[in-house]
Image (cartoon, rainbow, N blue to C red; front, side, top):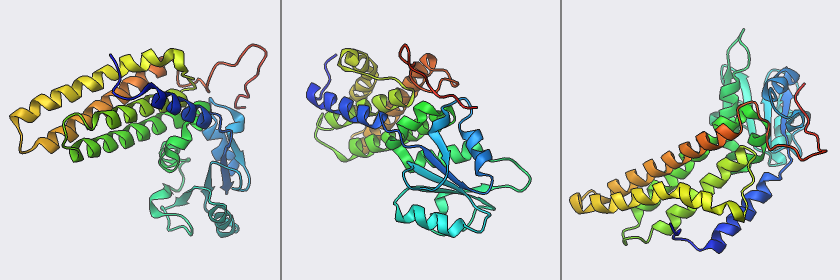
Length: 269
């Protein structure tokens, strides 16, 4: 099935995703019990993907509130324009951090790693794929964030565009980007030779668009809602299928792409 977008555009996306996948910036962790949090985040992953230290140079900075230097460390991250996630007893408020980026910490309990990973995924979005490939704990939350984000985008595009078929290139491009990002989050490198796999995967999404056009004839008044709902459902289904497919190739304990012969990959202690 031919894609309703030029192959040159898809190749441009491949280059963009490949560049992002080579981002080696780690997660910066600071504050009280930072070493403990780091060990939890790198479990089953690459040790160099998370470091304890200052926020400068990190992809995202996670700070555990409770020490004397909290405000200074958070100010440094803010000035360096590093995205911040705070972990605080009771949930905040925390200076320099949005309320939505504060993860509550319950007294007497361990770190809520799942909640912290979801907060990191929200802050990084597409920029977090390289870290997700190296940190299994981040992979699931990031993929879910990507799926939800692209599904919403496609729903808005489909509902807003009334000219028949005019929205298809944009929807398809978003779906291609979603699949490529999910692949990168699993440490998969997709090149031009593997583009047919993407074309086949997108067939389901294109089929759903045809269904939407048929439904419009039955419910013309609520056509915008039908188009939006179908685009949302189709994009989400495609993303979830991609997660299952790439997940089967890269189990949860896999910390990224298979090293080339002679290369080594740092493992978590």
